Image (tube, rainbow, N blue to C red; front, side):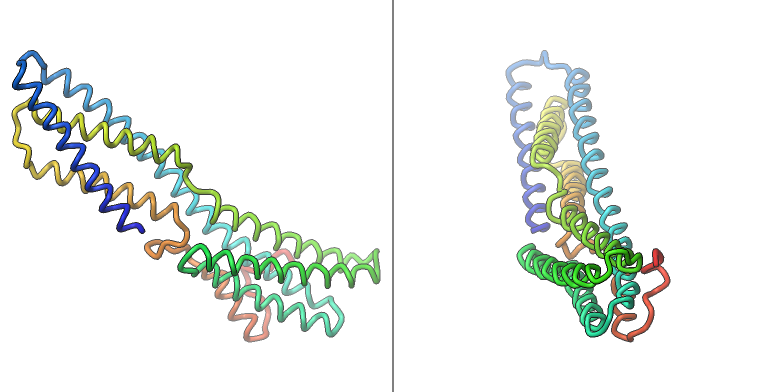
Amino acid sequence: MIWVIFVATVIVVVLAIEAGFRLGCRVRQRSEDEKESSVSAIAGAILALAGFMLAFTFGISSDRLHDRKTLVRDEANAIGTAWLRSDVLPEPDRAEAKGLLRKYVDDRLGAAQAQDLSQMEELLVESRRIQDQLWEMAVKNARKDMNSDVAALYIESLNELINIHALRAAVALHAQIPGIIWLVLYALVILGMIATGYQTAITGSARRSRAVSLLALSFSLVIALIAVLDRPESDFIRVPQEPLTDLQASMVAGGEAPPDAGHGR
């Protein structure tokens, strides 16, 4: 998908430059009144706006990437805390809760490494099912002693686990760059390339200048990078999952949660 975006952007940019160049050639043949200085100023202004939109859009996507990294650490901490506090449950609920939490971590890692959105959504549904099981178990035990502070702490950790899961799913699936921003970005890039081609023709420069190819590649690379950052399922840039993998290894070993996980014990 990213390669399609990159190639399509290169083609669009080159065609826009070509269209601007042909328009400039026609104007230059009909009249010599078109001034290079005024055309250069207009082209520069449009390219400056396109550059601003690129920077603005890149800032949005890079912030989302940072949010996804932070949420991985927060989720590992929340799961680790729930894992530690599940020790207060009586048997056989304690063993069942720990087994569900191990499965939960596996599903969360699977969702993060999913190759497509449908696979990710299936694992998110499974994660919510496990949340429901853990919550029902916690409520059942809390009803046996409504004044138990220990049970309240365990329920609090489950509540944090559920909240962070919902936030992480929202950031991954819904917090993407709006279509209107993409539309404005491409419109400004196309207009900027048309203006560049037009200016090239007015100055009498050669159409096949290598600078044109470099310009097309530069804009296309930045737009492709923004698309990569905006897509959590992309293979080009993956959010590191080390906090969850460390927690998974600790759970499999049957030991304590890693130091960074469950610090709110």
